[in-house]
Image 1 (cartoon, one colour):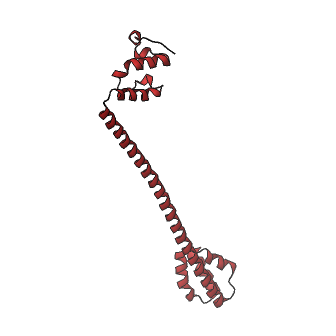
Image 2 (spheres, rainbow, N blue to C red):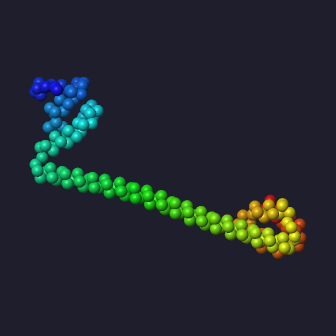
Image 3 (tube, rainbow, N blue to C red):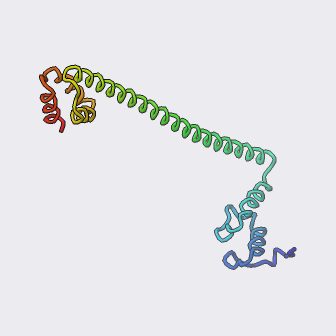
Length: 172
């Protein structure tokens, strides 16, 4: 316990050294303080004490009005926090959905291209017999656009050598 006579406490703000000095200064000066001075901020409880001290001088209606303002402020903070969380969640969901859709579309495209390659390889094998591994590797390496050009050109080949030459000239 510390006993102090407030009128005899004459330290100025810059002379405060101990936590006790800072609390005594606060108690003495609370009626005239609007904010906590910087060198008193190391005591976080002073901010709450200043709020209580400021509210002590309010009338019942002023105090009720202040509490309502605090409730509105807290509700606004809660609504903002909720909106941020929902926005983040919605963004994540949309990102996942877009990723899934893109993945599905890409998978469908790859499956279609692979199917087209298998059909073309079967047609070529029926026409020219067993294909060399070189020809098969060149066909497997074709992109979607290259495959379209190639599928139109296969009817121009008379031999498997024509086929190989065309692949090497166009895609090698």
